[in-house]
Amino acid sequence: MALLEIEDLNAWYGASHIIHGLSLSVEQGEILALVGRNGAGKTSTIKAIMGLMPKATGRVSFSGRELLPLPAHARFRLGLGYVPEERRIVPGLTVKENLQIGLVSARLSIDEAEAIDEIARSFPRLKERLDQQGTTMSGGEQQMLAIARAMISRPQMILLDEPSEGIMPVLVEEMGALFRKLKESGVTLLLVEQNVEWALKLADRAVIIDQGTVVHRASAASLLADAEIQERYCAV
Ligand SMILES: Nc1ncnc2c1ncn2[C@@H]1O[C@H](COP(=O)(O)OP(=O)(O)O)[C@@H](O)[C@H]1O
Ligand SMILES: [Mg+2]
Image (cartoon, rainbow, N blue to C red; front, side, top):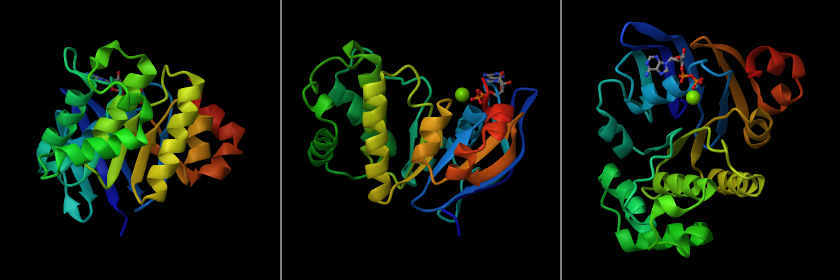
């Protein structure tokens, strides 16, 4: 059984029916790229998994547990990490305090000092800035902080919504290396990206969505080589 299985997901914003019978699965230990043009429903899909859509129906199971009946905080607790599109670094809080939020929202009994130490080892740039206000850092550093905050509760799977957006190439490279390392350590990633080529080079498989439903599934390598499909469904 796949780690995350979505079957016939439908989701709404008020009266707007956004996700239409979407099904996909993510295998334990893989990187799945979820791509598609602007407005296709990528963010809404992630939000439905995390319990952040106003209304969602269907089946979403994680590690064999049914997610849709659970509130968002309970889903975090089951081992899901989330890096939202808007980074949501809390103004007025230091880097360290922003990291602590990641532990608090997961409500797990993880030793805080140990967890922050571990994160500091993976993110040398953050280590130097633990006592600095989070929002004084560059956009790329704030994105790294958002990823670190998702990682600190040691989730089994992390959902990332366009992590490379607006980030300098050198940090995008660093981020790619980090994702590879996470995968090696057994963490499963669902990677939503507009930077399709970068995502496909990192991913094992790819799913394309359009108008709120899956229109194409392929290995990342074969989609990378398929300019026609990329042009049809992923051109901005
Ligand atoms: N808060 C909202 N209220 C109403 N409609 C929304 C809201 N957010 C997104 N939508 C609509 O839902 C659709 C899918 O959006 P989204 O999931 O953000 O797509 P993507 O992440 O692929 O760009 C779009 O048509 C968008 O306009
Ligand atoms: Mg989006």
